[in-house]
Length: 365
Ligand SMILES: Nc1ncnc2c1ncn2[C@@H]1O[C@H](COP(=O)(O)OP(=O)(O)OP(=O)(O)O)[C@@H](O)[C@H]1O
Ligand SMILES: [Mg+2]
Image 1 (tube, rainbow, N blue to C red):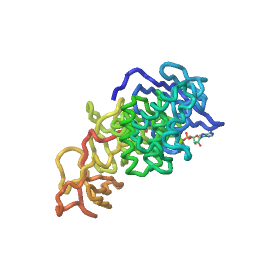
Image 2 (cartoon, rainbow, N blue to C red):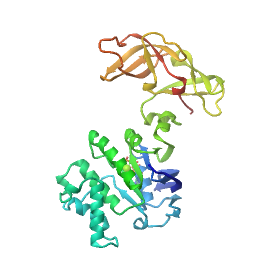
Image 3 (cartoon, rainbow, N blue to C red):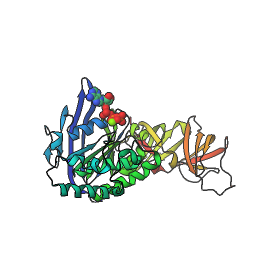
Image 4 (tube, protein in one colour):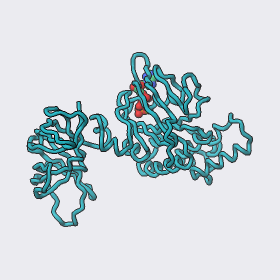
């Protein structure tokens, strides 16, 4: 993908209040040209409201939006080089695929031949040329989604806002369509902002993710950074699963921190945070796949004794819940790399857990 480093979209301190309710709070972010940016968050956190302000359907109560250097304040939706594909991308049921795609071009200053060319290019882009004459009810859900996308791209927006574009599709089709969406984005170079409440979808699609909670952006970064280094408890919980423990800093040694964790009945080592101090209390988070399960006590730091309380066997992997010495449970996601017939820790077995200091997530507050 080609990403131009100059900010293409700049959102500066944007808020939106409906009556006394603040739906979007002081959001600031920049998006570069050609990027796929995901807005991720639970229902009601303000994702659609933020998109509607970008598209010009709502005016911000405070803050400003700049697109390609131009202040969008007071610019009506039809004068913005932005297209919004709504949460329910209603196609016209009585129109063919081709007519649906061409609908947005009706008011464009172009000849009939130019319009036909554009529609053909869009049909090719989403690989629906053989279906041009069908009506929406004569094609599949995934194909309907592609018609909506082609319709949105037909006017060649600079910025495409997609509100839950894949929500209507079942899981398998969603996964396939995610890749199609990425490939179409790459071929057109249009900047995409995709709204989703599905963390896997955001991680698959996006170059960067903004995680939102109650109108606020909690963290922005590439998927791996937001997943591996969440900065708030909300983000840590929202992206993947995590077990959290109270911890107290007992020593700091350069980039390593020693923590006393009552649940572990032992001290462990972790990375560090800026300005961390001895005696500070914080939360230690561990993702289930970062914790290793052993039948024999392993070498190395961060070894914790435990006993298997629950286990769910999924074939290629298993999820364990292990009782810890100081009470509490650790979730462990173990890949079944053992050969068939080889013993696997079972219910009530004594086991050992370990984790790499670099895998520990430290969260303040
Ligand atoms: N026109 C409006 N008047 C009053 N409240 C509104 C209005 N539009 C949205 N809200 C409220 O603002 C909050 C954010 O709504 P928004 O539609 O942006 O959420 P969302 O993140 O898109 O959620 P979902 O994932 O369910 O689509 C919600 O609590 C909603 O009820
Ligand atoms: Mg919404």
